[in-house]
Length: 162
Image (cartoon, rainbow, N blue to C red):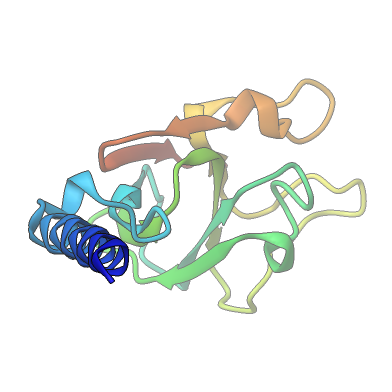
């Protein structure tokens, strides 16, 4: 019988230790515990500048890979359509997990939800990408425009060119 009590006492002690650990984890600061990494998610604010007018809207796309970058917004992780005021458009992509991203922005002057181009594929409306790179013989590549989101909110400025 005494052997049984020792086992029960040690089981009870284990339960108390485990319960204490759970309580300590729940009382710990949110940054110290993991909720599937949600506490590490950050915001990316995009400020697009140099619009020549306030006609139409700004289309802003956040890409997490080279798939579709920069022209196919359907391949983007997130998109936004934003009004233009005083030559500028701004949006924030909230709760973005850490990683490598690139931004593409275009000025949809005629509000038809696409970047209009001539028969050679040269854009007729303004556009720009993160890091303000311009492609050599075509659109810029994802790796040229990409940036790393780590442990802080960031602001990316994109200068529109026509």
